[in-house]
Image (cartoon, rainbow, N blue to C red; front, side):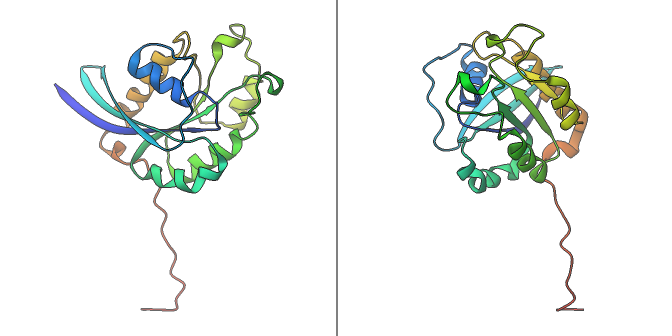
Length: 192
């Protein structure tokens, strides 16, 4: 059986559901007591998709803006970055994650070509009625696919994982690195 390997870096604010999502993917259960990440963790996962065994490394990153420089170094081997946020109204939790979403998306866009935005905790709102204006977010982040998931119920997770594998399948050999390389301009001061 054919095997493919790639890295998925998961970023976002503290309490946005990153670690709980990865735990749900790996263990197939919800853990309400899951602790937040204080350092980047690498978790291996295998998924069969279209007769290909995908060996996926999830990089679970700490979710503080102070860790941004540290987080940037994790993008080197990333095929895709998942930017997590909790769209719940700010009064429902002590750590607003939606207000820093633009910063995390900007960081991802500067580093890789493949980005998905993931709204977590979909079990906390009525179906088809998320607590954020989905259309305005889709317009603001045009071209970046958005997913809604619940690590508690598992809703949306299989679709997200299949979409990642499909994207890798479509990118072919060019998918091995998602890092953007920019040409450094010569300033003309040396070595003509």
